[in-house]
Image (tube, rainbow, N blue to C red; front, side, top):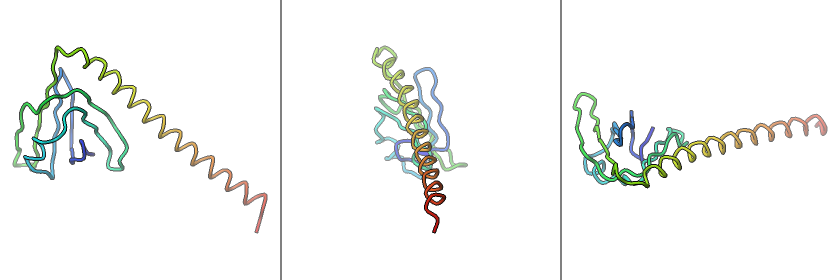
Length: 123
């Protein structure tokens, strides 16, 4: 999976903080990443989760055993916009799932039409 395009092996959000375990990257890339919206995507590019409203990288720890960076991002706990951002992120995740389901359904219908065409117009 990826977090804003950086390979991410794990992530967790709790108490206004977001932990990202990032690998195959450099420290400058971790420190310079856009933290306003963290988009977690699958290897196939599908959006798995969205975390809006993070302001800064609070800390970064390099784990030599796994060659990965553990980055902790923080939010402004007093920001009223965080509640709205959380709600929109949840809605966004639902909408992405609905779009994927619709695309899958369209593929199925396309296959059905192709099968019916073969039955109606045999070669």
